[in-house]
Image (cartoon, rainbow, N blue to C red):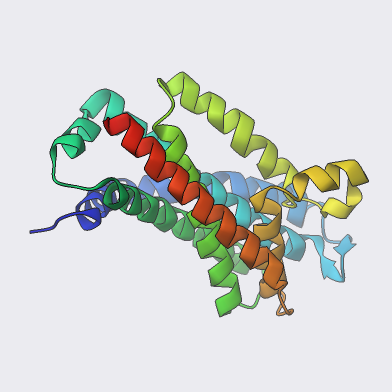
Length: 245
């Protein structure tokens, strides 16, 4: 019998399998538009840090996609809470809080890694050659861990889908556009750089981009992502405990 975190994770995998073809299409549309509009049409004659703009853009889009799809597990949790009452069943089941969080976080990370892989495949179709090394995938994993854990924690706080949408608008959307996805943070005022460097996505984008270019990564980026992920994970455990109590 499947117990603990594996039962939670397996349920989410079944949902992912059922929706997979539609999700892949959804994961592809926005990045494809960005690649055509910004990378292909505009970026042929633009170079950033010795790379074409489309080469600069692909790792940033991959970091952004892994963030948004990891965070999207919060919406899945709230659909299960508000409509299917799945969380009430977990409350009655012999599943610990940490097991529940691990299962949901792994589900969010799985979605994030698949979404990031879609971006890399799209980049390859546009002729962008990157280095797919271990440092790149480690940055993906840590970025997904941060935002999946954050999503689980916030999902236990919100009271409706409107609240969930508001969380996305205030947390994810600003970070997506100001997190080093479309342009280097160095182009912003110094005061803005000091604020944005406190957020996890700029570190993920920088780590993924450096690894993708075959450059030596800054270990501080990975350390910051790990610390942020651990904090978000324990935050998720606390909010799940409060929700179950």
